[in-house]
Image 1: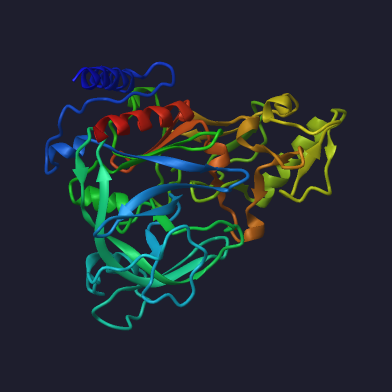
Image 2: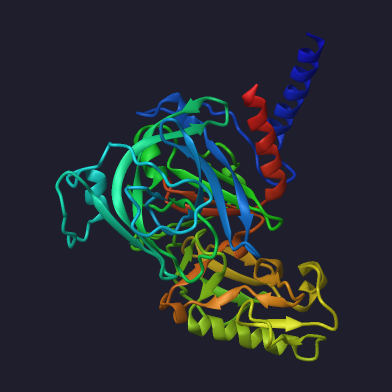
Length: 428
């Protein structure tokens, strides 16, 4: 009995830390005040997932989600750049990649081709259905990877931040034919599609009345972080916001093109069509922006104790010093910050800052490499893609309710630790 009281006291202390934590990282866990309309009380709660992985050397971030009856764990790569969540599936599997878990055994709950979610996936009208009783899909990614399969419904086991269990039936892809992408070098069970479309997990949870239509992530430069659904984990007044594009409704893209700054000064490049994409480890600029950045960096490094490391093929552009570097802290003084300035109104602007630690990595050879790549060369044409490297140590929020994208500096490593502590509390 004494042990139980001591344990309870410790757990209450942890909970008070979690619920009261805000000023250190401009982040807070807030109790909901309730919402009106068709949402239940649960709509004021958030679902939080611990994130695992890093930009380098792993090259991905993922979450563990329990799916099926009985629930089984699967590692899913985070991807705000696509809508469909899919698992490698034993249907049977025609072509599957290396996976950390046994292949998903699909439920018998096939989604027919006349289902609204199936129709939403094939809005262009060019899709031909092989059978009326099932909805076929094929998703392709910028790196050449793809998944082919059918849509099914199954139970997802989720937890609210307040400890309540949530077990909705959601649509997902049973992928029986996968082709690896050029940048996919790790075992995976599937992809967690977090885009703006109706088939995304967030949209489905929102339409069922479980969460607000808001998603966010905080990726730590030390590895790991958190992913959340819902809007009660941050103070909106402290967030830098920019309107979401209505024309580019498939992606999380600011409404107004960004202006590229180098060292606080304009590069002259404006109206850059930008997408925030957690499915990409690195940031991609179009050819004109990429060439401007590399030219300015090389000019800035002239006379500095760095020279190009042409024998390091970790990334297209690397530099070496007199001795191997151990961390970005040792070398970031030689590099100027970048930023994208987005208009938020007639005269107002908001700045998305990209400091050196948000565009550089240290390779295994101890060289410093540029984590910004030429997107035009891989088929992104004129798009500019903000990848994980440039979103590290910031909370990035995609508010589909208010059609806004926001960001705020945060200690994502500490937030992940607090989330883990809170999860342990609710296990007791």
